[in-house]
Length: 212
Image (cartoon, rainbow, N blue to C red; front, top):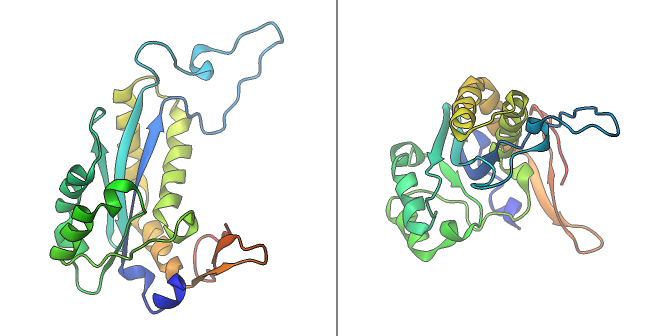
């Protein structure tokens, strides 16, 4: 039903947002071979202890001609009020003629005051968004690209992690982002024979194809 209702929307008109945590223990799938009686190096064992693992919480939005990353302060509680303060920074872009805005169903996003704020400011939100369907939000692909590349550096501090995050995010070619948005033009949602929720992407013109 969701896909049917919105089948005439063009992927290039969408702004796709999401939040993501990154931490210093993500090594992008790298492994270190050790003898049976040998410990891995400290960086490969991961950081623990007082203060926990250095990590960063970010909010990002992508669309045709736009790729923004916002660093959320470490101790900041992201409630509805704080979330709308982030959105305010990008209102001019999000209210572009013909545009629509994608956000998931996280509590701050679906809060009544948040939805009312978006409505009053004429942000065309696709709501409610399809749950558990990352293929429908191309920013998830950007997160994976960043995660893989940042993990290679094996950052040891929050400062280093933030610097690498911004460096890698800024290095993503806008042309790649535009193609990810264009790839949203053909997809559908259905229930399989077992009654399980499924979302299938049909992307003949996109840079990736995936079924969830």
